[in-house]
Length: 230
Image (cartoon, rainbow, N blue to C red; front, side, top):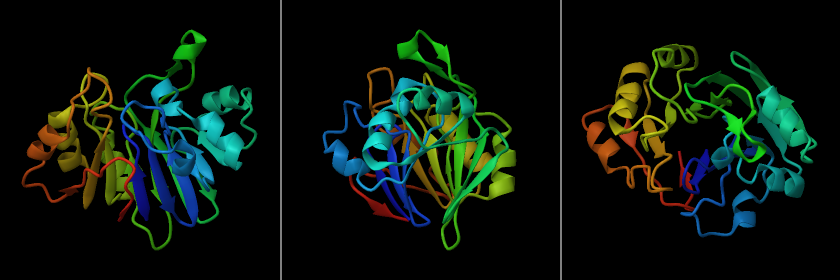
């Protein structure tokens, strides 16, 4: 797979013959690149929850590319009303097969609402598991605190690549994120996210890297806008 981080929790994942945008908050203040180039060729947008810093540019992307939105039913209904035509709704415990890859929606411990709509309820938050033949299974945790249900996700799907929020305050910080990775998963590679975007979050992944010292998993902190092969 080819993975590109655009800051915060926005990723492009070229996986199973698809081009997937995960929580595409491309307008975050740390990404200075070309937004249209970032989502060029997108086939799917997958959202973990309904906060604005994760929905981001979803409507623009889907309208410009014809990408299919994959999210919980409340987000799909909400964004369908904003002009997103192609949607695939699912919920916790569900899996969808989308051609060359499958996606599962797993629990996350967070909140979910549309801030721009006066706090409109946008369903429960979740994590995303991507699966495809000849690809390593990827678990994008979304925004979450640590909880023991992560162990079941690790056992059921055996992800080898983990994308983990580490910024603290609104998600796990470095210490708890490292405990989650080491205790509940058998990752080969861990990619930190949800840091450095705003002043309330940890500015760098340094604390997390230090907490992961001695772990089996390698920590990969990519540069914004630079693709990496996994």
